[in-house]
Length: 375
Image 1 (cartoon, one colour):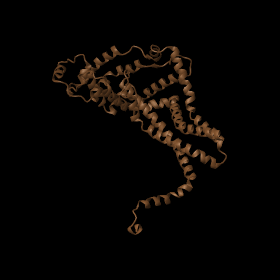
Image 2: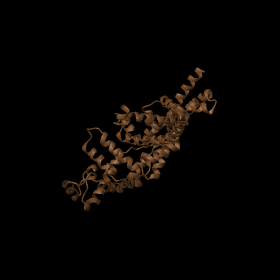
Image 3: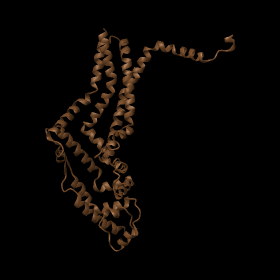
Image 4: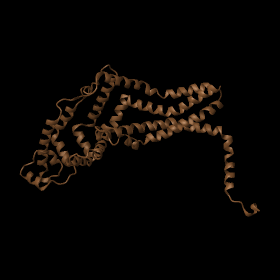
């Protein structure tokens, strides 16, 4: 009997501790390893019209806060200028060069290629990022894009020296110097036209001539054997983690089979495990529902070699994921907390009846005796 009780207690403790944690793991895996949910996560937090301007602004803020000290003044100024562009202006730009539908299609392609790779024997994912099409869209619309820059950027007026050069048709060869100042209204069209030519040449010279093939990028730093091992690990997690919550449930079933013979037995043995699991789930769910400080503490400042803008995007994706998981955890475990609390009240109902009288006696003891009582 003692052995059975000991085993039951151990199993119930494991149930209370593991249930909230495995529910978190299962729901994270249910999003990360689900093609549609992962695509929706990326679209709603990065690629959509609603999210994209916010991410750009956050990326510029992170770049300004965590960039290297030795960055040039022009780069820091450009970071500040980009951070000041209104959300509506960013949408105007992307509607011209990469509309929302094209961005959603890009997300579908990236995620779809990732899951196709996980379901095949290929060593590397067959994902191609169409940078030439994206930059081609910019080059085809270089004049309206340049006009957008002069309209959206909030920068000081151009110096008298530059204005004098504009009057003579001299614009130099540095487009950065032109877009970081505001020309006189009468000269804006000419400056925009000249700047668009320079920007078009700069993009043509610096842009990659081919699309980015992800397999080529990865193979340069990871062997095929290592990549296949990583994929096998991911597929194992993909199969097991969504079912992780079944393990503590199994512990509960086995423990119940050892001791439950009546309703009274169930109440006696399950009250504290249910209450503890629900309480842990409540605390963890509330923490995950507001994960910003946790994520920033873990990811900031960025590690060496990790771009600050990429960290900004990662923080937002994880924040959205954790909020959803935290909300789910609250829905799943708060009922357990309520049931466990109800069982405890039921079990200790006789003792609770004496609580008011006991409290009354306690407070009476705090009242100093009268003179008559002392006499």
